[in-house]
Image (cartoon, rainbow, N blue to C red; front, side):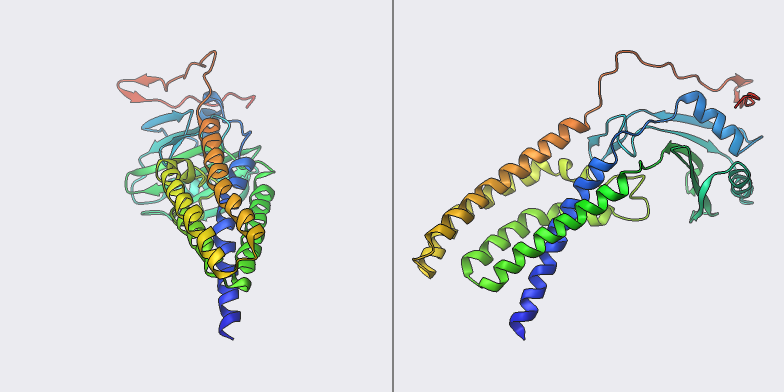
Length: 307
């Protein structure tokens, strides 16, 4: 009974470790290719969703920044426009946003818990709009919605990683050799920092706040750690395996090569993701049209009839 419980626990551990890695890679791949809204489009949408409300401040982010990693312009969670309002304690903007979103055909309208009042989030035409209340004020955010491939890619990456981890750790648990358990221990130690931070970042806002930058951000820590674990594994694994069973030289060679290649492949994947995450150098920068000001106050332009 104890052996079976150990086997199940090892399979779950492998599924969680490599499943989290697969989730991060799937979310990164599935979230590429979005198109941020233009400045004029964002201002027009803000005027339609909150007619008559004048933002006290507005800002535009071309390249997002998560966990110390710059996202590209076509990465999910990167480009967005934000507008801040003074709403007081009556939550008037929340009800106004809800009515406007319903009458204008926004889909997936759902409530977002806030600081003083509950906000709302909705999607339409490849964009996500969210009105959120926080301690710093009321913010309307307009950003690209998750592309159609995001959910299938994330689910496929998670399932593939979980299946591979469960199979690998389950195979090791069945053999119950000290050398194989050493390999699982080294793999667990090498992946645990990234897995822990990824699960800390996971939540309802996974579509808006990508979690894959956790791994490139940890690259300065993980790569030296993997190199140290590689040296430990290469030194200790053949020695223990030979002492346990002198007839398993083929297994020693195969697992030793796997231990040597795993850190190299992971380091190369992190480097590739880090390079891909760097913002592209634009050849021409679109001018940002500021809000017109009268007597030191921002005045919201009325949307044109053709919008």
